[in-house]
Length: 278
Image (cartoon, rainbow, N blue to C red):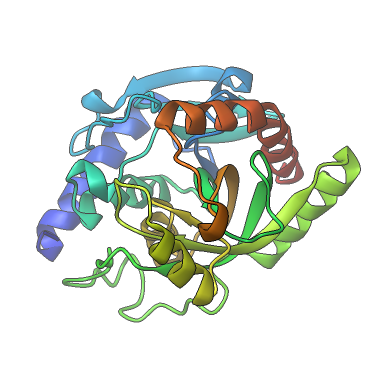
């Protein structure tokens, strides 16, 4: 449930003040290091690392592959603040809780948010291990993080979503992929609640409504970032091929293995985008 306006602002401000005292507020670039980008933290010259449990109001990550800490430092010469691990609706958190950290980053002064995630590929041209630059999304999670009272200081009651994924950032990622010889797919991400993977009929449905990949995160965070006027770019790691007529059972260890294989490429590509923001 979304708290009332005063409580919401107080929760975000308290968390932001706590972090400001520990990491400062010089970073204008934020990163959400989801599946497939956890190792990018190793390339950050870390100045401070703060476990989520030490940040007032922050949820705790319950997913094994998510570390659950916020790190601040420099990456490719750029001041960044990174969430190493995110939160999901399927963990039992509300849309407010899932996205509260994004509001905190925006309050700290983050102007650009770069996101990674793992997704199942439904576009028949995609293959396991591919990367997909998100051009648009579909929200099928049944909730919206903006439901409830609107805090006008954060953003408008009815934010525009005609271009949620920043064209300039996408062009930068395309150029970096071309320079590195990386195949970078582009397409639409559909968010579902999870945690189960989809049935054959569900994959057919999701593909027919225009989605190229399916995942269980990202969209709530993007909505809230755009509410604050923060620019967004998101890249998915295609961890499994979800073709209904040739569907094979897949395990979570196999999905994590696919993400790990793609991690070096995604790490390099995301680093290039960060460097462009210097």
